[in-house]
Image (tube, rainbow, N blue to C red):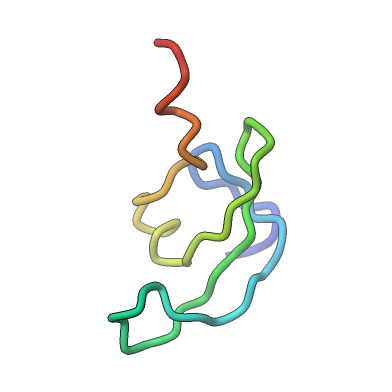
Length: 65
């Protein structure tokens, strides 16, 4: 994954380093700082981007259809 890659509405803007995805996880995973198309920034793990589990910052819950 490279800076500038897009996954859904998220664009990778920075490498956020290795960390655990959750408190029950045994392994560290790569995380990235991403910017959503609405302007919000969130940190997302590589597997969540790769397998399209996270596609935006959560703003789609509030968008009118």
